Length: 409
Ligand SMILES: Cc1ncc(COP(=O)(O)O)c(C=O)c1O
Image (cartoon, rainbow, N blue to C red; front, side, top):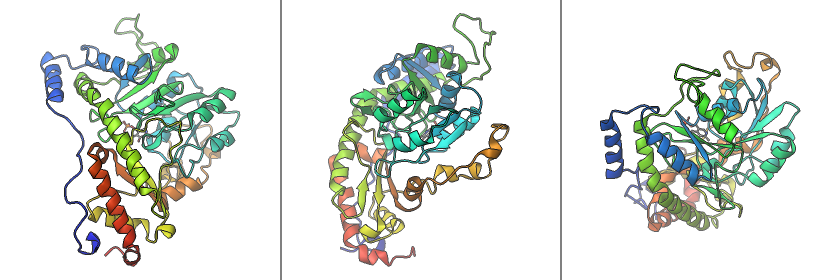
């Protein structure tokens, strides 16, 4: 069978589930919020209700909804009262925000490499990166698979470090059946438009720590306190509140999350099993403790030599077969121009000159050579969709010799 890339018929010519998924429930809820005329967080009840329900679903007593999943990370660091220029350990295979939030909290991001097989923070690298100045760690549950929280929490406890889960990809994911967002001291989620639960933009902090929750709540609301009057500001902060129209949308979307997560997880697990036998294909390795993945991304590593064709050619061939996929981050976060040029604006004045951001070989290999991403909405469809994807991979593998000659024409 000729590859679609070379003029053959594609495995699939129908689109996968598109994102976002919404219907009359979202329309009714947003319209009701609109008509209420109460559009601000402090006027209505949609955001408050969402905070309560989302936090409960994620095993937490407190949820503080904010403008996005970047500011949530920053607020978590600031609310914990960490001193300026503290070191915060983060993985390098993640979105920019995991690092930018640290710098914008006037703290030093220290990269500790990821494991090549799980794409998540390597606990050994984390431990090695700890210095007397380390105060926090931000494990990222990349692609919706929870990081090795047993090991990370144990190391953090030994060194008295704050654990902030970057759960921007991990709505509804669990680890030993405990929800992401309740596994460290504080969890941070994003509701940006690509995320598994979305209101276009938005974020939330989740915690079971009453003092941290109170500090976050104050800081997301211009430093106000519950017992104070409106024009009374106790700590330096700003307005990071979420609006009621977004709250209404999130309340409707939240009703779908449980079912969607179960579908994504079942499909993702099935596809991983179907692809694992192909030479050079390594789906994200899933430890037993990862009881539920949210599959914000289905991620795999393509070993070009073992597969017999280069990643870019394989991606082009899969896309032509009707399977949309991408290579993901082009280079590791520690190599961003912002770090190379230490373009930190007014932040980190005391330490900037001595900072270095050494290479992270695993992250580097994933970015430059091996990673392939399929996005979450693909996993909302029926099992047949997974079979199509597996068929396309098999077809591309069969045609690998011809594909190896492809030069992108
Ligand atoms: C891992 C990770 N952390 C944080 C964020 C930031 O979220 P937001 O876009 O809502 O600011 C993202 C967004 O893509 C992300 O992927």
